[in-house]
Image 1 (cartoon, rainbow, N blue to C red):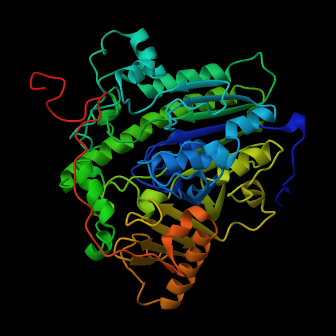
Image 2 (cartoon, one colour; image 1 turned 135 degrees about the vertical axis):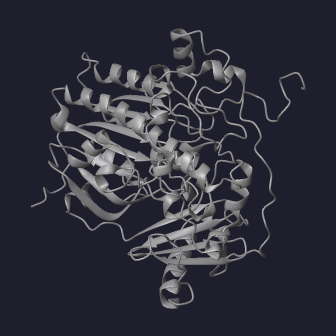
Image 3 (cartoon, helix red, strand yellow; image 1 turned 90 degrees about the vertical axis):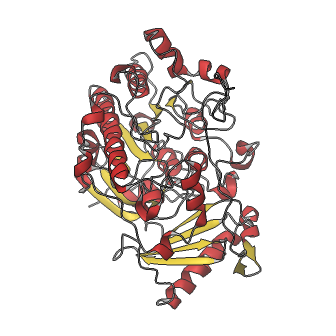
Length: 502
């Protein structure tokens, strides 16, 4: 019988460790039947806890997803609907961030790795807060990066690198190999810094740790020997769907062009997939060292570990790359939860889950439940409450052509695209490739999910602009103007800058 949910006493409160990757698809964990993944340490988590099989990023792009898990609120409350905006004061709208909340509950807190906040050095409330970001607007930002400082202290051989995680130019989606050896890559730095926090023995408080990897976000540049782990000829090719479905969201075409991914061949795609899965295996090896350190502790069985990603990557499926889409490969994420003292053995949870549920899970485990926009995930995993009935996703500023939204309920998914007022309806259970649009053949389902979406958008003022009276606001279709993102280097935005031509 499931153990009933209850608030733990002070002495029983678990350590809480969040381990996060960036842009990792849901179908990348071997123990869940996904090939060609090689993830023996993520498999360890699968075998010692819950695999949440229907977990979603409700705004599948870096900054909004991260603010969602740090606040427990959806974009309608945080104000973040895309990366390309600025929200001046998230705490004013949302209250304390998760580390602040757990610190007030008596937890020792540490945050390490990528945070992608705005401003980039925002104080989230961690006692120990060390950064390794992927982008540096200026040379000063680059030199202030904790990983960059660590790398330069270990070796003088890599000071010439403008980008320490791989080249982010027209090669953004090109198969690469990291310039540094594995032991000097950011994954190794992050692991080393995490082990230092896990092995601290002079603090009797339970800990909350947030460990955030930059990869497998592009560029796909695993170090040697991981770069030769997978044979591209043995990798699955991307799966294009129905052309009318794949091109319904013109934003994907805009994004393909922006990151130089609009003419990737099938062979190049297999090369990229080989490097992508190799990057995940490198991270998996690092996670193995972290799990070993947890298991050396006397309180290992009372440590709640959550593994997840902020969103996925289309990897050529649906003729697209990157994220910011409500196709499964973009918005569905891996999500593993392990707490051996409470849930021994391997289990599956097939209820709908959102990244916002992490706030609820952590605060409930700490004895001070704050569900906010999330469900009571602790009780849902215990089986003492009914899981959430639906997940709503949004992207792009409401009331603009870039706005799009999703409702996932039961076996169905409905997608609304404001640019052209286009609609997609998928029966995900029977059509996981999402290549059969049933908007015309199942009008009653479409009507019910559309109504659910309208009701959800009307609940908060920030999303009401997406409505036109009692209907979804549509705009005449117009292709988004194509433009390249040419350079990501520190303060350099175009070719020819900073060199003999510039």
